[in-house]
Length: 295
Ligand code: IMP
Ligand code: MG
Image (cartoon, rainbow, N blue to C red; front, side, top):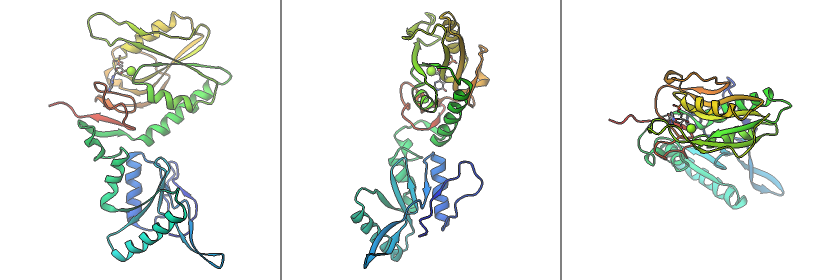
């Protein structure tokens, strides 16, 4: 475990890194499940010198870039723990800006919960049934969508129009993976089914006449929202009008609407997180989860 070789997680590649211990493979699987990015043994730190020569290095097992944290895994075996603690103390003294933790197997979930991941984290968001899309899965897919849009709109300067408020995380991430000059605007409408008909509660600020407009939605359910907005946007004379939706709850569709870009097709369950809310809660979850059905 002291090679210091730069070993990164292969993006969808078949060969897993050569873990030195099964507990490392297990920890990597847990991280993947929660969508926490990781590098395996990416860096070796010199920790002892003799006569100007490095005589001892320390290579922590993992680096988690999202948390800016190095992790050394350990078992309950006391001799090993003492030795690892000694190295970690040296590392902290020599490199005070480095964050490093010694982690027992029983503490994996507790550590991740502190950063908002995993079953213990959902103690703070009771009512959640399970994770449907991990932060990592979302990140990858949004990046692919951004890439596709950048190719399709080459030579153009699209206007992204987001539908508030559920679209906020998706818009922020999609925007940053589009490599063209873009502008951004938002609209908001009153919800359907409240008797008084649909109203625009926030209109466009930009003039979209002659522009290539991409309407960005978090989730398409019955399709009523989108149907209404598309009809409205058409009246503003855009050069083109397309739709990009992160989630498509296809089985619930009432109004047929064209979706040009879709992140994921999802089942007929109530979803929260990554901007989606239930009564204004859960928007800040980094993943998309299924709300427990009320009994
Ligand atoms: P539609 O008009 O029925 O297509 O509904 C679209 C809007 O309903 C979305 O923009 C969301 O704001 C909301 N919505 C639909 N399904 C869900 C869900 O599963 N979780 C959270 N919000 C949802
Ligand atoms: Mg919405």
